[in-house]
Image 1: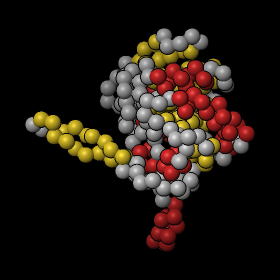
Image 2: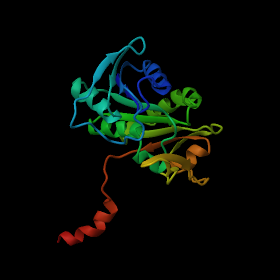
Image 3: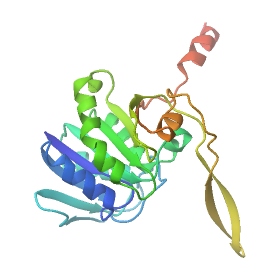
Image 4: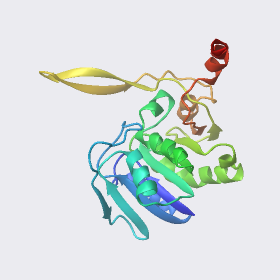
Length: 241
């Protein structure tokens, strides 16, 4: 297999080293990741300025590039710039959950949306803030779950979160609600700092990625790049007549 690994925490982050080292057992690995921290950049790309991209030494047996831009630009360079086709694109392991509504902001998840646009299968991996042990402990089991159940035959891209609570298994999920929000705190004249805090209310609906993750399950959620509301369209299309 030819595998691309990226993230939004930066090419020197612990999570991407974990993921790239693990991915080496699956095939040939290329790392293309942001030069610096790019969290919460969602699907942003750079269009008006040149991008600094340099090949770097990351680990033995891995070709690696540091891109001074967003996670999506990393995927775009690795595919369009290097003119390569990959069998699998992996993003993460993010140091912090990407669950519920937070996936709308996530650069980790956006890289996998870009994978779908490149007609490539992809998985975004996230875990509790700066606790990578659940990922180390269960990533083999999660990948075996993907292969055994042929998940890529049903959908190209998935979002995976490793729980910090006592591990109970793997759960297929749909998107939950709000997990984090921010308040704007004035720090100086004209300057405001966004300070995040959890608004998650404990629940037990294991079909939701929020509840499944918080209850000790690895949550696996199929994703889609489509942004239209199909149900609303079905109700409104009579207006076209």
